[in-house]
Structures are given as C-alpha cells and as structure tokens.
Length: 407
Ligand code: NAD
Image 1 (cartoon, rainbow, N blue to C red):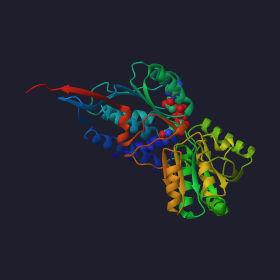
Image 2: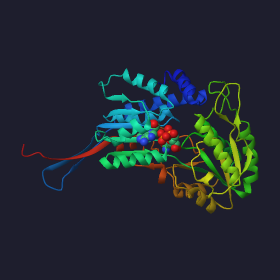
Image 3: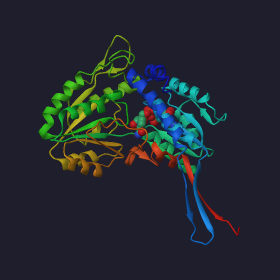
Image 4: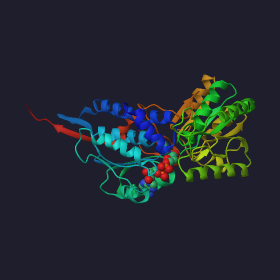
C-alpha cells in the first residue's frame, strides 16, 4: 500500500472526493497500520505469577476472539478499515469486513492486496451491501465474536442493541462536536492555521473536525478577521486538480444536509462571515465554499449536532473557565483542543477536557497510528483503537493454573 499510495490514493480521491494529496496520504497511513501491527505481533504479551497455593504456577495469556465483524464508514474508507483489519488479523482473528456503500472501489483495492498475502483462505472476507441488511445481519449474528464499528451515532446504537442481545463484545467509534479553544494569549498564526486545518480539512467530513471555535473576547475580532481571510483563500475544486484544498461533499445528500445546516445557522441567529454557498465549477460536483459563522451560542442546535460539513462556528467567551465549560458542554467527547501560550492553562485543560484526545496548540484533527485513539460520552464505546490498546478488543484473556507435581 505504501509503494502504491499514488495509484490507490488517486482511486480513493476519485471515489470519495478528497484532494489527491489527502487520498495518497490516507493510503500511506493505512499501510503504516499494517507495518505497525506486523511488528506488534512480536511483542511479549502475557504474564506469569506464582499462585497463592504452593506448587502452582499461573499463566495469563491472550487468545484471539475468533471471528470479528468490521463495519466502516466512507470518510476515511481505507485508513479506518486498516486500523481495524490489521490488528484483528495480527492478533489471530478471522475478519468479515463490511465497508461503506459510497466507497466500494477502495474496499476492493485493499481486499485485493490482502487476498495476495500468505494467509489461510477464508481468514479475510469482504462483504458488500447495504448497512441495514448486511451490516445489521453481522451485528445480529451469534457466530460473530467481536464487532468493531466506526460510523454515525444512530447506527452505532442499533449495533450496540443487536450485539448486546448475544453478549457479543463490541466497540463503537461515533460522531463528535469537537471544540477548539482560542485563548487571549494564543499565538494567532498558530490559532488560525490550526482552526483552518481542523475545521475545513477533508471538507469537514471527519469525526475530529473542529466545528466549534471557542474564542476569548479579547482576541475575537482579530481572530475572526484573520480566519475569514484564511477561509476565503481556500481553493475548492476537483479532487484530482492541482492545488485543490477542499474537495466536494461526498454525495448530493451530504451537500443538501450542509446547506440545510447553513439555513439553520441563519435562523438561529448566526452571522455568516464568509462562504456557505454551493459552488458551480467547470466539472460537476457537490461543491461548497467553506463557511465561517459568528454569533454562535453553545445551546444552538448548530453547535450541538455533528455537521460533517466545511463549517465552523465561533462562540465568544469571556474567560478560560467559561471556555472550558463550553468546550465540555456537549454530548460528544472525541477531541478537544486549546491554543494558548500558558503552560498552566494548557495543563489544566489537558486534565479537565472531557474528551478521549486533547490537542495543545495543534488542530483537533491529525493523530498518530501507534497510540490509542477514541473518545468519551457519545463519541465512543468500548476499548480504544490503535497502538497496543487494540488488543483489548481483538483478544481475550485466559488464566491457566498449573500444578507441576514432583520431578
Ligand atoms: P454510517 O453510520 O451511516 O455508516 C457506517 C457503516 O455502517 C457503513 O458501512 C454502513 O453501511 C453501515 N451500516 C448502516 N446501517 C447499519 C446497520 N443498521 N447495521 C450495521 N451496519 C450499518 O456512517 P457514515 O455516514 O458512513 O460515516 C459518517 C459517520 O462516521 C459520522 O458520524 C462520523 O463522525 C463517524 N466517524 C467516526 C470516526 C471515529 O473514529 N469516531 C471516524 C470516522 C467517521
């Protein structure tokens, strides 16, 4: 995958609409999950102990779960699937993968690579079809030993209900409503760069997108002014065109949802500083100019629901305490970010943000592959993904007691 990231990245960009540089980057990253877990299998897993009873030894080790169902979304179709498939196989499981319907070509491309590897026939299986039929059938099957799902909150709840009926182990990575706090002592270059990348990267279609910009009143006007210039300068275009920074929305339905949220923003009393309109370009597509909104209030529906759109809303606050309160006032909890020069504030925020991941002076989006990833509240359920933590879902612990007897 790493060697073919240009070719497969182009396929992914054509299919999903993300700019070519992001498509190639995703394939490369997906390859890194396989190289990481190829090495992870060599790590010493397991413990030994002496029993409290004389002559008995205890051996604690991890075994594969068995058959794992993997259900993945369209927005990072190859990376998300890879950070599930690679550890599932590495820890000795059989895999049934149900990819999203909007991105079948990249699923076939990844499966074709896996099909050429030296693994037993039937260990890895790709099944395509609708979520409501194939996905639901997997979630309901008593022959599935574990389920890893990334997708929307509503579907996640359905999977949880189905899995609970069979007591099947499962893990959910769902939506979010990530805040990026900009404090009065922030480096404005860092703040604008982080907010622009976090809010509009991948057309805002990522679970780590910064959709709430929580800004201290002392730097509010300067931030909005600079952010407006930075947002307006983004080049929206065809995924494969040189220089494109923001691709189209993934589907007609997604674009309609984005524009409906723009109407809601106006109705709820936000001011549209820039963007927010559908764009007609020379090639057909569901294009939209990234939008910056001000006058936001954290109680607005706009600031409570996941948009999955290139839209960010500024919420003005008067203090650090209020900023932290607003940041945490959400049903979700995937990523929370702060831009500040104060070590004391950064440390306090890191400890008190109610999120699975915290970013200090960085965009909310952009994570490594060798450390745990996941959220709190309605953003996640079950064990963390990625890094060594992945073994919590893909293995089960066995404790053996051994009485050796006399030599
Ligand atoms: P989705 O929930 O519509 O679909 C996800 C997958 O579930 C697809 O493969 C779909 O076919 C399948 N599915 C649909 N109904 C099903 C059912 N009843 N039973 C079983 N499977 C079913 O999500 P999406 O639109 O593909 O992706 C966008 C969502 O994914 C957003 O909410 C986003 O936040 C979330 N997401 C989360 C993370 C994360 O790590 N937290 C990462 C990426 C995307």
